[in-house]
Length: 348
Image (cartoon, rainbow, N blue to C red; front, side, top):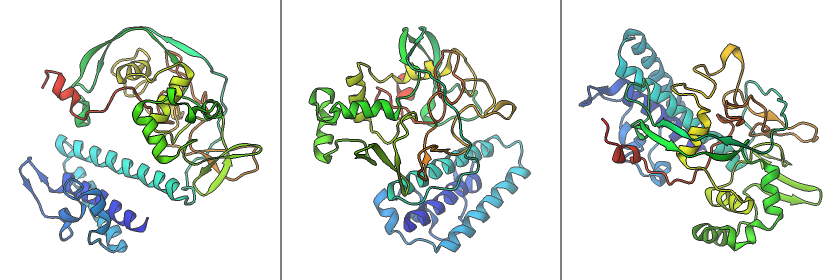
């Protein structure tokens, strides 16, 4: 973990420096603040397994590099408030850093380290919200329009997509629902699994989700360094696509396509950043579980945290779907292709 931390934190600083300080007009690149920066920290040229063997900076130098780059980027943003290219790369660097912060969090879970400190662990109350919603059919624009201030390259370009009416579960699958699939010998039933998924299950010997354990009094799971009762009302995590697909086959369902998911998530709203509007937390109210921390496990007598909120904790979108933003990553039926939009949509 120490070597990973040293590389990743320095890589975060390198990425910000590379795009926000060294980039010039798409042609020339300035020098780094440190020697041999690109061979050490450019993930485009340094293979993943080689990162941990590269000659790394001492940790105190990594932190100084991080602080110096940040200070210089802030100073440049203040000097050049109207530089749209700089503003774009500053936002890209911030999103990149958030991605690595998430990687640090799941690495702590992988290694069984202590739960990270959180700034606001507020209990939340869930409300009953079982069943499906009817999602009306319609047309919407999938992908990023050219005039969006910020977009990722794999979101280009916006194009019209028509979706037929469909039904969708009101909430994400909960631990309790997934436990019913496991209890019904879901991992042993070949007919529920695709060919690749069954090969994965046979190769790994998986008979339950990662981090789960069974005891005489019920299901438990490991949350960082604590083993806690399975939070049955929370959205399930740490299941892969094969497991999610097998669960859907068991439940008489299927995973949504990317277009169905985004159409449902928007709830009929177009051109808004969030399902409820333009602001992340309007009037100071949190409407999704993403920034404010984790939710305590109550009434169990055990130390630990839910890593996802109980379903029904936040207001639904216009279609009646709960926690449509935040809480969990969602599996879709489609296979990911980073250049799909660019290759199939004739737009520039």
